[in-house]
Length: 153
Image (cartoon, rainbow, N blue to C red; front, side, top):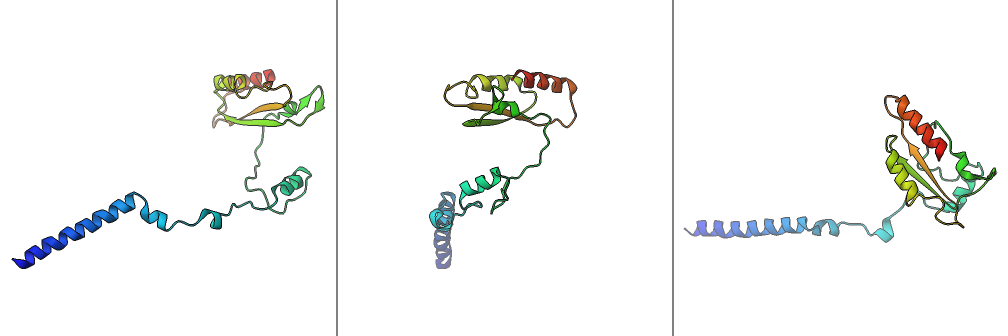
């Protein structure tokens, strides 16, 4: 009889301990114990004098640290007219580059009429450029509508 009481007694403690450990795990107590200190250990891949890297890129030089997100995309159209005003080059203060699907004409119009409105401030040159992907199967009708939109804006 005594051994059976001892087994039930031990089983109750073991079950309580397991339940307590699972509760602590659920609330992240063990995760927090093994976390690294952000201030001491965080390292962004691109550390250094960012302004000098940008200067080097703008002037055709090879920066000391290569850009992380290089691109080699081909474009159907370029938007050089967005950086022109009265046939002279300008440097916009803010450029919104918005990713959009080709068929989302109404969404692009909504953006142009709201936060992407280029004439919002008279003293700040704002430009909005939409980057559209290409469909897997070319759609000439859709592309002609895109070309018309490009001509309008």
